[in-house]
Length: 173
Image (cartoon, rainbow, N blue to C red; front, top):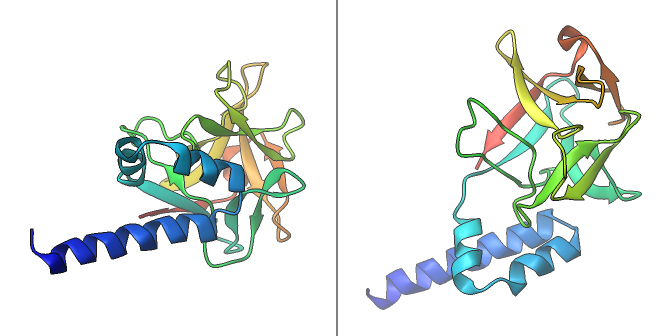
């Protein structure tokens, strides 16, 4: 490998790490990424990643920046999420910098929280497809499928009806 190729690879890696740190303000997750050995870090950074934006309001899903809860906020980018191996079948919202952290709906369905290794399938947010559009949904403890509606201020509420849910855009990086 010649020196120019090596320099380009180093610059690209620095830019990726800087972007993750800049756009992902949750320092403990970024520190978790830095404490990994180089093989693990390259494996995580090399994964397909995506972000979510509400189509109607153009608000981005951010992680843990609003009183410890995730919220939809204006900005250039949202939190980097890890794309699953079979996104057509199952697309849970998992944090790229710490893939064991999932985004879950709170018990009242009005907030989004980050949980490490959730012990059940309940409240785990995932992208669903309804009439050709992406929406965010979850299953509550009563085994009911609920969906997320995002208001103009980025607050969320849950609804039983997928037609009332906010349409979201998945931006694959």
